[in-house]
Length: 416
Image 1 (cartoon, rainbow, N blue to C red):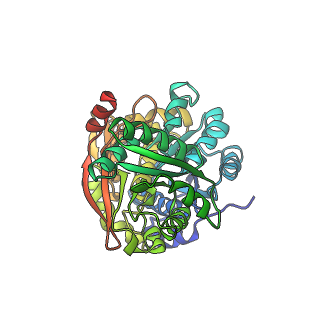
Image 2 (image 1 turned 90 degrees about the vertical axis):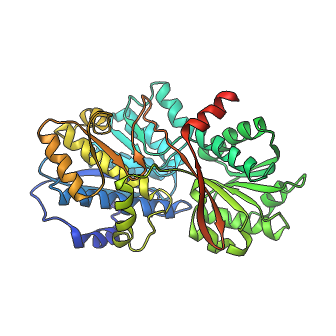
Image 3 (image 1 turned 120 degrees about the horizontal axis):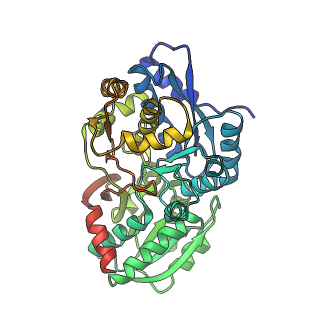
């Protein structure tokens, strides 16, 4: 099958591209470039290519350019598995970055990368199922993700809802692994904090109309709607909710932090819309990314969902290949923990920092990549911890209202 390449990304990045080297190391990308999660995958692809371009400008890995073979999952698990299989069996890639959403990442992991012992790094798949698979020994230690688990986000969202006075909620959630798990984690925490859930309504993706789901969710007169969705379907559901007379108060998941969602629904209806996102602890990498990403992304904003953590996924993979000394999956797996270890020289985003990192690696000295999302450290299951960003929509703009730390979330879960 013909490779689906992001030609626009290559053009956008060509102005700073390094002189081509004699060899190339290919990394597979399976991302949601189209479909309900297309907005996430497009931002993620540009960010990963930006990271690779920065590495190549710094000298490349193992004296080679690192390049992406990018495939579109179309936001569908079966398509993702087919594309990942081609990358592994035909392309012989040692690493796959992707998917963005959990319903793509999980089947790639269980059907392709784990059985083949190929490294997989997801920038934004947050389902607790991925932790469970690791705990059960089904990933062989080859899976990592640069986003916190929904086991934590659900608790953070529940606390934020209670703090905003949203104590009687209906839930509408996408009927997949991500939606089910976030709904369950949120529900458990929300009820423990004294909240009431009036109804839970799952929905299937890509419907032209969600009026029946919106009507079902309005039973028992909730104060607000917790909408666990993606921007395209989420906008259709929110419009149906509003049209049917639902209160214009919303709690939203991280992926709904999207200007496309706001514009599609209408900013005037979302002035009491609140949300949570996996947060960041600011580092020099954060500043670098926010200053440069729009210039190489064709105008995609640096705060687009999945963009920041996708850059980190790309940077970590590239540095790990350099640390491994060869494009060997098992050595790259182990090197990922080495380049994010606690005791190394801090390394930040950008070509100058990566040049320093590559020199230190050649000298046999340890490095510690501190990313756009903050210092990254993986536990034994490939998970990270970090703060959560609390935000609301005001006059059509997303504004950050505060953060909740991983420690605070852990304390709440412990009390539960």
